[in-house]
Amino acid sequence: MKYFIQLEPNNKYHIFNQAVGSEKLFRNDDNYIYFLKKFGQYISPIATTFCYVLIPNHFHFLIEIKGKNHLYDHYKQMEISKEKTNIKSETELNYEEFVMQQFSNFFNSYTKSYNKRFNRKGALFIDYLRRTLVFDEEYLRNLVLYIHQNPIHHNCCLFLYNWKYSSYNSFFSDSPSKIERQEVVSWFGDLENFIHLHSIKNINFNQPNL
Picture 1 (cartoon, rainbow, N blue to C red):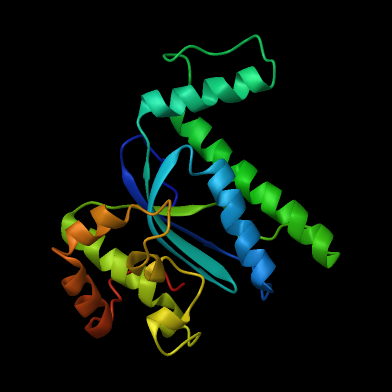
Picture 2 (picture 1 turned 30 degrees about the vertical axis):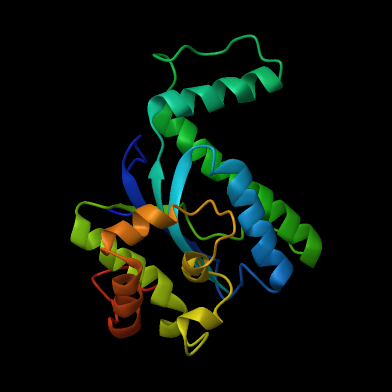
């Protein structure tokens, strides 16, 4: 059960999941775009994102759950917007449950839209959200490489910059982004080393076969 640990405030996690059976999570460009839009709606308020990749039948993200103050503020704003009167106090709120509920809402929202679009029924994602705790800086750097190289591993493209549905290309853009680009690059020393390691290192360090 190592992939089902609690998502606790101020910790970094590798989160991932895949479609049921031989299904695809993403059949066209609109699906990828809509998934990221929903991620921004449900997850960005509660987590910082460092990198990601979306593959036709699965995804990977490297995130950090925000601190309790941020989580509580978002919870409170949500409850007020719903005109709830029984708002929990900061000490009453179960932060881990709140975070998992946000992910559940995210997946349910995407699945509902996907099923309607393709006239299908039932679950789209396998099991629950899978996650592993990021425990040191070496693991952190390797995980960035592993995530960005996933499209090559699955024969989706020949070069990292050819795959549109990952965060890799955002590191070379000046456009606004929710990716913490500067922090990620700092883990590699500078952008030159970031590029160099992505080009030469094929990472497979006891990660799930996704």
